[in-house]
Each structure stands twice: as C-alpha cells, then as structure tokens.
Figure 1 (cartoon, rainbow, N blue to C red):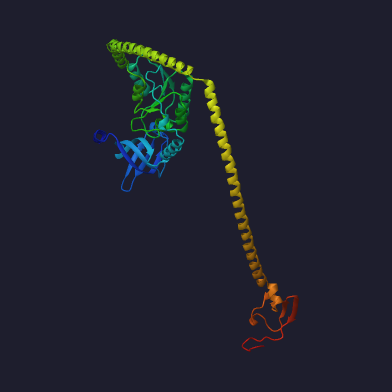
Figure 2: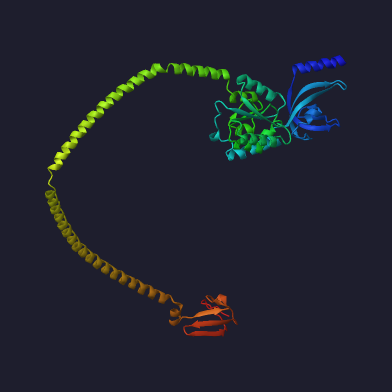
Length: 439
C-alpha cells in the first residue's frame, strides 16, 4: 500500500504539478501546530485541502467558512488515510474580494488626484552617477539585480536601503526608504523592487503612503515589482514600470560596452570633420568677400544720395516756403469759420423745428390722456356701489351675508337694509316669491 500511494503521488506531481481552483470554504480547522485543514466546494463537488503553518503565516486574509477563495496547490494522497487532498501554497479571496475592492477604490481615488498622470512622467538619466535601490537585502531579487548591474557597468555606485517587502509595517518602511534616498541627494534615480507573488504578497506596494512617496520623489523612480502580469499602484505612480526587478536594473544602468562602442563611433565621426568642415569654411570666406564688396557698393551709393540731398536742400528758400504756408493756413482758417457759422444757423433752425414738433405732440398726448381719465372716471362713478344706492337701490344682509334670494332668509330672521345715507334694521314678517308662493 505504501508503494502504491507513493507511486500515485509521484504520478500526480508529474502530471499536475500545480492546480488552480475556486470555491467556497465549507469547513475549516486550525491545528495547534498552525496547519490549516479545510474543505472547498462548489455546486457539484468538494475538495479536501491542507495548508502548512509556514504558508498560513504569510496570508493577508484570514480564511473562514463561507468565504469564496482562489487556491493554488498540488494534488496529494494522504498515506495514513488514503484520502485525496490538495496541499495549498497560495490562497486569496476570489474576484471582488476585500483586497481587490480596496485596490480598485484606491486606484480610482488616486487617479482622480492625478497621481498616475502620464504628463508628469520623467525620462531616466542617460548615465546616472549613482543608483538607489529599495528592497530587501536578502533573497534573490537584490542578488540578481546586482549581478546585472555589475555585468553592465562594474563601477556603478549603488545605495541599497533594506526594507521588508511584505507583511505588516512593510509599506511604512518602503515609503520612508524612498523619501530618505530622495532627500539624501546621493542618487540620480531610484528603483523600487520585489519578486512576484499574489495580490496579498504585493499589497505593500499598493498602500497609499508608498504611492504618494513615489509620486513626491524629485528623482525619477522605476518600479520593478513582481512579474510582468503583476500590476501595482506603485507601478502606475512610477515614472517607468519595469516587468521585473532585473529589467529595472537594465533600464537604469547602461552597458559599458555599448557606451564604448558609441564613443568610438563619435570619435570616428569627429575624425572625419575636416571632410565637410573645410569646404564650408571656404564657402564662408567666399561669402565674406562678396559681402565686403556689396557693403562698399552700398556705402558709395549712399554717399552719392546724401550729396544730392544736400544740393537740393541748398536750393530751398525758407522765407518763400513759410509765406506759402501762412497763406494756406489763413485760407483754411477762413473756410473753417464760414463752415462753423453756417452749421450753427442750420443747427438752430433744426432745433426750433424739433422743439415745435415736440410741443405739439406733447400737447396732443396730454389732451388724449385727459379724455381717457375723464372716461374712466365716469365709468368708475357709475360702478361705485354708493352711486347705485343713491339711485334708489338698497342692499339687504342677514347673518353677515348679502340676501340675493328669498331662499336665503326665513320668517323671523333679522336683517339690515343699507340705503344711500344709512342702515335700516328689522325682522322678517313674511316672505313671498315671484311665483306668488309665500309664508
């Protein structure tokens, strides 16, 4: 049985080195050792799962019954019970989980503030004097980056600020390291780096304080976080995003051999300068000679024109010119005075005519208005209730109401009769309608 179980596990690991599945946690047990045993189910099946304590300590979310999760793991048959199970080495809340929702909400808010704007992205320096790296001093990331930097530019100065890149407090350390390197003035460019992982593993690089520290840096920042498929908010805020930490090192540090080739090419081009510079110098000399000749010709022509102007000026008699100007001024003054006098007379006549028309129009408007007032006054007087009473009519009221019909009053009711000069009070003795009926 032991050999059979071992063979089955070997086949499973060979054929299915890793499984990715999604489902809802239906049962969960956390052992004293820290190992977690749980069951994941969907509509048609369920799987037994186990997560070792070392992996469980790195979880950013606490698994619980009812949580929909996405799991990565390898299949296994537990020899003691012969039970099929999945050894889970990565677990995250599925889809629109808490972290994913938090990621999207923070992304939208920071994007509205302009922290991811392409307009503020800066170019990397062609050849930095020193490079600053923010990452953990342990692990393969810094080792691979330094190998690549030394391979490309052995004498490049590198300042490393050791930080945690995962877990509680990592975001604060990363943000502080970015600000410290930026303020130091020692580096020309910064690299923020970390290896790949799940959303939970990379969450420190999605924290707002890290994103704002990257945005506020006065030095260009390259984000080399995770693999090419991993996108963090730190990537979006950085001036340049690299697909991997090693690629970030390649972007920042040029290859010495490439620079040497470029320098050699420039030297060769400089050595060939005389081939195109000397003909141009000769052309400049020719143009200079032509310019000197042209300047001399223009100067001679200008001198001749000045002498001709002097001669013409000598023939002018100032007294005669002044006399002509005075005569023209006198004639213009007389003409102007005559025009002003005529205009005054015309304006006075026009004003008299306009004044007369306005007076006639105003008088007629006043007469029409008086007629309208008299007509309206007569109509108002005719409609005045007091005038109606003076013509012999009266108003009968009972209980505060005007009596318009015999149906509104009964025998014995008190009433008031208003006439033009007072009020008459009384009581109803009898009532008779127009049809002869009465009481």
